[in-house]
Image 1 (tube, one colour):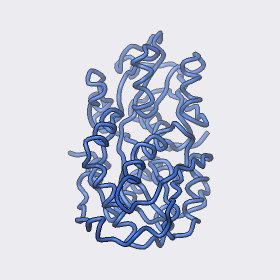
Image 2: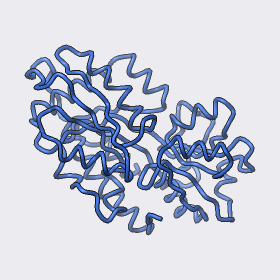
Image 3: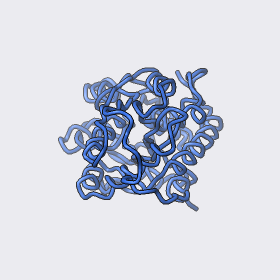
Length: 319
């Protein structure tokens, strides 16, 4: 049976989009795109990969990334929610800001459904579980066999890495203890410095370290093996119900005119069809699914329900 999160992403109906050329001119010449995480993180990488391909399209504005990190992504996301719905501000919303944080934080400063105008899902990506190259853990089986309390790093509370570790803790019955960092870079620095023995992070952050021989990737957290790491098993090969994938949705504040959301979704679809964008996504182990405003909105609602159940049943708490 397909995993509910996976089925929701690729099984939701995607209405046909009107061609971008049929839409009116964009109301501003420069659009700020708020990324609620530090530079170099997964959402930042996705935004900086995709946005240049959108800016190059006829009649498109310039898209400029603005990193507004803090509080597990809630600070920048609240800024997005409270921005004018005039087409001048968009942002990336994620598994953290719209899947897990509403159930982990006592207050997040925004309604994850009512305060936003979803445009399209712009990335889906598995995570990776890595250890230093000299770690005694040499395989997924070794990881699943640990019996001593073991710290694991992530790029912050509520992130996909945090949840990937917590879900493995519960499903595998493992004595894992979360150590949140302010950024992915800080987490990797401590892993490589020997201050933390294990990390859960996006695959594009882990892969270069493995290529350089600094770490060993024990497993990936997605629905199957990654094309980047075909010899590395997926955790669900041992735990069939396990699945944690990070995702990004491009969105605007609530009330963004439908003509703009549809035009933007059409621009994303056009970029996704280009070999250059497809190659860049493949290099990072990411997927860019066919999406639309309606599809993205339904996906977010599904993810909210899915992670509420997981977090409640697993009794996941912020430390």
